[in-house]
Length: 396
Image 1: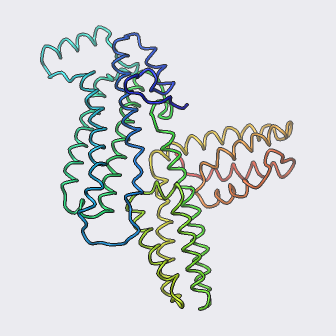
Image 2: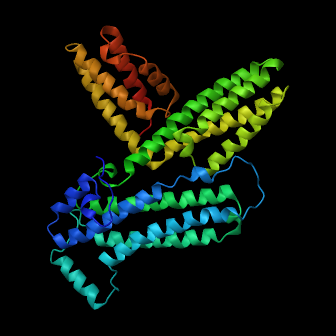
Image 3: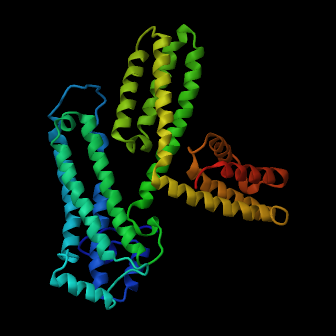
């Protein structure tokens, strides 16, 4: 359910379809209009906080010495981050000003609510959620300012990048929560239906998981080759590894890695590059680098613990399961429909690639098979195999 373009001056055209439906269903048109302005500002903030490509600020040079000149490069990014969050805070303050507790305005507000002013069907007060979210965002801006005054942060390029990424990601999450939690007071919704940029963020996480999983598999194979390499083959293996890491560095997964993870990759790529140009590199030295790199990349599977992927995987797992059950029920009476459902289930299941090794093997093989044309025993075996692999996943 894609959003139309975000336009802060025209909030009517800035929201996801489901969110617009919720607002249109609210009986209090004035309240709906005020909330729409907040949602439009939230969509704009998420968009601006998401579109910063920090890769251009990275450096392939491994240097731990302080470099305060990088502050000049990053200062505009930090400034824009603060301005983007403050722009949303200003809209919330304008549309839903906080009332001092116990005052006349607070008493009137409570009375109005009791008389039927907007309150979610769940009984929660969306205005209270907005106020709480505003406090969290304001605290985050303060904490960002404090971090940027820390010499140990601003004097190290990678630490500074990591902190900026962390704050921008947290701001996006908080703004997304603001939209989801307030919208949820009026109707049962999913984050994908109402949170701007949510689908793009899920896609980025799925991409990181899939590509780093393939890199881990490539590195495991390279590690075995280095262990068995003759002295004259060590340099060739180092050059091949350098090519593989260079290819990874051009992927979307690399762009979406955390800065500190990229730092490890950069440092190890530099060491591999050093060995690749030596006429007779030591197999022991190359083996040490490959072992460290393979272990590090395997550790990136921790991305599976991100809440955004946990929710995504549950939904994909359930969708696959429904199609496989239908495929199983039709396998005797309608093989063509059963095979089509199997193909649909496997197509959806590709979004789980990188979660578990056996499932990955199945999904890789399935990409090369005409699943929608399977019949007989092959169809039955494929359905049962995929069902068994899904049953082994811990997604609940």
